[in-house]
Image (cartoon, helix red, strand yellow):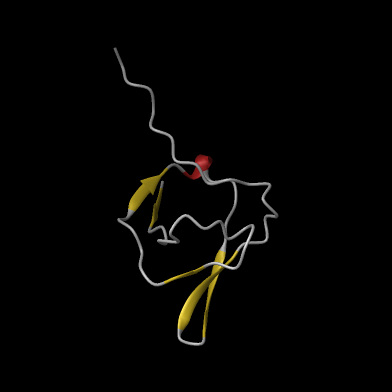
Length: 69
């Protein structure tokens, strides 16, 4: 399990365009097997930017597990 805090990017995809953020969303816990790529961040000119070099090949998707009947 991993405890992560996603960045609020207003829907922008850091793999496709320069993406900066100022706030983060609520923390979540995810299964490490669900992680397909890791990105970094850098502070420049008093703001944080996301470094994503996955070239759009990896996509972050949060999927709810199926409900038990």
